[in-house]
Image 1 (cartoon, helix red, strand yellow):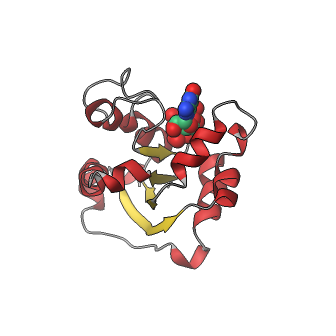
Image 2 (image 1 turned 135 degrees about the vertical axis):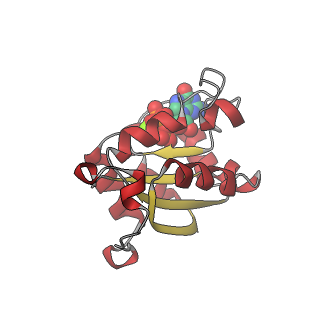
Image 3 (image 1 turned 90 degrees about the vertical axis):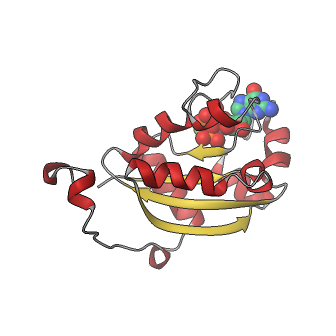
Length: 153
Ligand code: GTP
Ligand code: MG
């Protein structure tokens, strides 16, 4: 079953929107299998956003992502990566559809509440940046078969 690495960015924590966003992920049926709060260091930011380090906006992104605590979450579910990306909406909150997290709560291209892995390979790489293997939990739930058919579990 696929996993995705999510960050609730500093603006989500500051705006007290973590519960709202986590609630949406849970209601969708995604299973929380790892969660912690931390402050992202410059070193961690550069590892996480290695594809953007050379981009002109990187100094601003670094300043933002290190500016306060974040919540790192690993969720699990069928096609969890693309499901989460769909729930997030487009990068720019002004262009994100209503009903998405960024579309409902944001107006910025940078200060956009949530990060989600964009591929299963990225999810594995990013999960290893934020979590030790023993910090992730495996568990079954009696609701699993009411959330997905057994062929999807
Ligand atoms: P993530 O899930 O955080 O990776 O967002 P994304 O995949 O929707 O966007 P992308 O990977 O292209 O950019 C990573 C993050 O950098 C975005 O979420 C924004 O916070 C920030 N960002 C992207 N483009 C810009 C930009 O043009 N200007 C600024 N200031 N920030 C940007
Ligand atoms: Mg990205």
